[in-house]
Image (tube, rainbow, N blue to C red):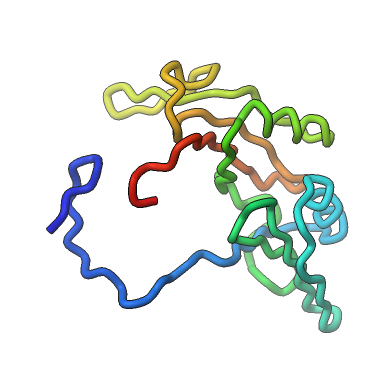
Length: 159
């Protein structure tokens, strides 16, 4: 049995093969509008395939990501705008915000969280100690799907 960084124990038998998150489905109302939005962010268009009026799949990949997103028709019963809190990890939060704002995206101010008596509170400004995984900003796509930018300057061991 091993102990994790936060003191929890990990007694799970490790899998015998890698399992990687490959795609996240983002429910949208207007595929072409969403395609235009994500392309305006500089995301790579990997595929745009339509198989009749009930099925279309568009795959886009954020710069530097190994995980892509799927937009489309016939992919999910989830309502447009219901995906919230999908993380986009960036090395420089100020630079990422400036880039998105320069592309016409409304991005929140930078914030960090404090925890008090089991409650989380959002506080304006970056984490005072500048540590990785602690500073954030948010933005949404045209349907209201919410993205969370998280600054990671240095990855935690084992990540």
